[in-house]
Every structure is written in C-alpha cells, then in structure tokens.
Image (cartoon, rainbow, N blue to C red; front, side):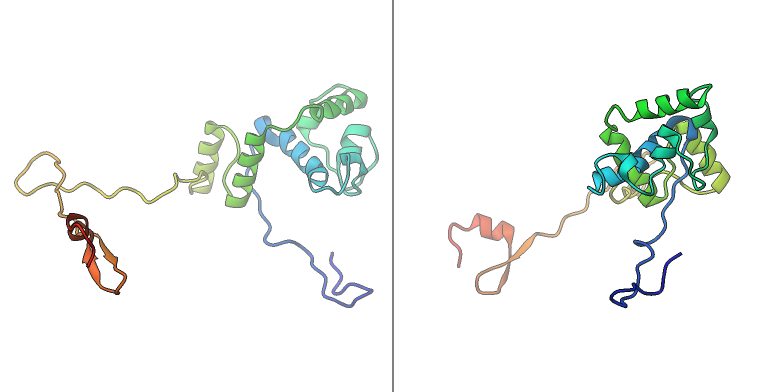
Length: 187
C-alpha cells in the first residue's frame, strides 16, 4: 500500500509506474524463464549486482531456501527436484546462462501488448477461451481488395491513372514534376 505523501518532502507518493500489464504465459515453455527474467530485472536496472542482493527478489527464497511469506511456490518449481536442496540447485543453474535476447523481446512485446506468450497450440487455446485475438497482427495497412474489370469473369486489376506528383518551386508555384524533368532549365 502506498502512503499519501513522502515524509521528508510532503510530495505526493508514486504508487506505480503506469498501467498494470499482464499476458497469459504458457507455463510449460516460459514460466521459469519469466521468473528468471523478473529476478534479474534489478540487476539489469543497476539496483543490485546479484538478484539475492535485491530486497524484494524471490531469488533468495527459490535459490537459497530463505523463508519468505510472500513467495508462493509453483508446481513447476517443485518439479525441478525431489528435495529442497535439489530444487534450489536447479533454480540457481537457470541463472548461469544469459537470457536469450529474443525471449526478452517476445516477453516485453507480449506484456506490453496483452498478447499470449507460448507455443501455437497455447495461443489457439487462449484465443478460443477469450474469444479474441492474442497475437499481434503484421505491421502496416491491410491490402485493398482487388476489383474486377467490367465484363470480365476473372479477377484482373484495374489500372488507374496516377495523378502527377507536384512540388513547390522556389517562387511558391506548383508544377508537375514530369514537366520540370522534361524542361532543360527551371523557370
């Protein structure tokens, strides 16, 4: 919970940094990678040299077994090993390699856009459950439908004469580029 003002200055406190953002995540493929991404955020931001040094990180609870009443252990974490020591070692092993930059880009895009993160089957299941699109459309405007020429049974493109491109000259007059290019000198 946020205080209404900061004690020394009396300035209003900031409770968050914008809107809450979330994305459905395929737990089999991405949940542990997302946990690693979150635990490494303070390191990327320069707030700590190691995730264990950050006060609000779950790393100490999951990788070192420290008691933390806020951390809820997921079934995928429990599947990392039979004993607590084995799970902690397996969780620490996740941090030995760098996170794939493509995964980080996909995670950020999914979170910021509200898209699903996971495999094709997972995305189809989420789209069916929500009744909406859960992937980003390709960039750009959709192509215009092709029109049929009158009296033709097959689709043939109709050619339209383009308007000549115009440009403003030094005197503020508009002239066709085709006439300017054809003339040897400008007026």
